[in-house]
Length: 114
Length: 113
Image (cartoon, rainbow over all chains, first blue to last red; front, top):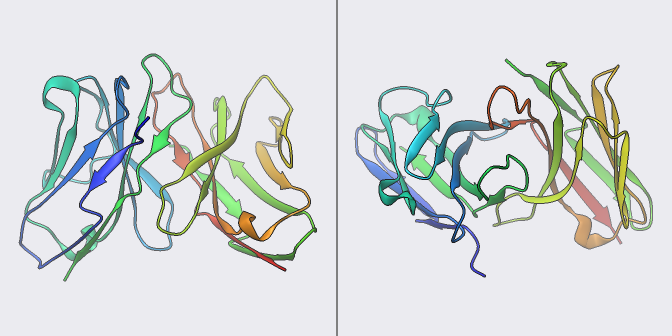
C-alpha cells in the first residue's frame, strides 16, 4: 500500500513568488492534515480536512495560505505571495475516517523562500 | 492553547543503554499522547501512543508512561541500537477540541556503537 506522497520534496523560491504544494493521502483516508515545522521549532498544525470539507483551519497563519481538497482526494496548499518566514518543512498526514489516532505522515516539502 | 514541552533537545547514549525522553503538557483535558520517530529524509512515523485512561504501554523495546496528575509523559527505549538514532517528537491532543496534534520541539537521539 502506498503511503502519503508529497510533491515537490524541495522548493526554492524568491520572496513574492507563488508556490503550490501537493499531498496525496493514503487511499481511503478521509482525514487529511497539513502541518509545518519551522527550523528548530515544533511541528505546528495548519489545518484539517474531512473529505473535501475544511474541518479546522485554526492553524493557518494568514490569508496568503490557501488549502484545497477538491473531490476529497489529493490536497494542495498554495502560498501566495511567499514571505521569508514561510520557509520550513510542510508535512501532510492522513488517517482513517472517524479517528484522530494513527496519523501517517508524508516525507514533507522543504520550502525555502529567499 | 495546549503547550507541550520536550526535554532533552539532544541525547547521546551508547549502544545497549537506555534512553528516556520527557514531555509535559498544559491542557489537563488532553487525552491522547503519541510519539513519533523521524529519520533523516523521512516524515514522522508513529512508534507508540497512549490514551489518558492508561498509565503505561509497552511494545518490545519501547514504552510510554503517563502521569495525568503531573501532566507529563515519557518515552523509554531500552537496549538502544544505532538504528534508533533519529529525532523523536512527543505530542498531545484533546480530542474534544478537535484533531490537531500539539507537538514538542523534538529530541535528537544519537546511539553510538
